[in-house]
Amino acid sequence: MAAPCVGPNYLGESMAGTLSGADVVQLRTLASQAGSSASALNGLRRRLAADLAASRHWQGNDAGSFRSDWETAHSRSLTQAVHLLETMRRELTANADQQEHASSAGGGSAAMPVATALPAAPPGVLPTPAELGAMSPQQVHDLWSGLGAERQAEFSRLHPFTAGNLDGLPVAARIEANKVAAAGQLAVLDANGPSTSEEARYLRKVLAGQISLVAYDPDKGNLIELLGRYDGSTTTVLTYVPGTFAKAGDFYAGGAQKMAAYLQQSDPAGSTAAFVYKNSEFPQDQTFVQSADKPFGEQAGLRLAAFEEGLAAQNPPAAQTVTVSHSWGEAAVASSEMFGTHYDSQISLSGAWMPEGWKADPATDYHHFAYDFDALATAQQLGLVGDKYPLGDPAFRKHIYDDPARNFEFGPVKITTDPMAKIENHSLIASAQDARNREAREDIARAIYGGRK
Image (tube, rainbow, N blue to C red; front, side):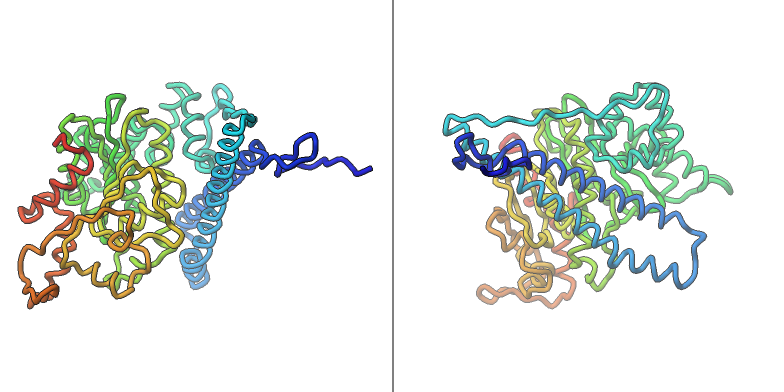
């Protein structure tokens, strides 16, 4: 007699021994385990990065060499491992969905696993920043909801930088925590008398409630600014990711927010919440080597995916999710899709590239806006930024505009005597103020809000 099968039967044999398809419960269990492992590994990577950044007393050649190895090899290897686990989770989930659909179509039934809630924190006990940092954004959201208002306020008071930058916390809680963090940073800037720097003026507006920060970490240059109201009446949640050289100073001066502000104000219903996003280091090298660095872009996508997961836990159910990205920002957005983020609309403004293995989400509406005389488009066509980019991908509906000036046409070919023309056009597509970009920016708004504008 054959020995009974005591292990998990992933192929799902029937009592008669005939093949009936995959065991949906087991597939979903494996998917959940892969997702949990990805979250845990990413939390470990983030904690190691934070600890390494905080270890300022460790100096010398060995320290410098290790930090360089961390940035160029170790951290990226961990990111790739997280990516593989997330890919496994998505594939297992898709297989389970397909099997469940097949079973339903055939009159069968598939058992569904019972979701288990994260246990509430013991009364009077606050979680540590490290404990929260190791959780997924959804787990953070669930745990935070069970803390109660008093302990929530205490945690934000004790750990304002953690609370202000923690994906999964309610947006309102992050804004209040970042006011505390901004007050501390402003006190440093004003130590020798009231500072007149752009950063100080910006932080004073934060404290006055004129600016809402959903992320703020001056040591890392991280900033996410909310434009508009984010509440139960929000019908469009828009994330704007600026381009290659974005830095904190662009927020202080007001330039980083202009296109997002234009789009937020273009909503005829007045119910768009726009998040202007810079929650990772953006490329700053003039050689564009870092801009084309795929692991670097994928790390940014992983962080963006965590932010979007935190929003998804609290977005109004009927709200549409939209992302608009300029130049390198597309690399971060497309990479976030690789980590499981879904956007109802994904809009590229002369977007740079998508990572290897990227596939269009059939439930996402893709658009690409650019001028026909663009420096990045030339680099893409020469194969300098990889094989996948919005201009060459059929998933993106193309909106290509005539170069407004400084070119000569010889049949299909354009030339110019101005060496900066292509670079200026690359920036022009993301301009909210230049009159030459009026047609394009109005079309971008129409792509988001349909014929209502």
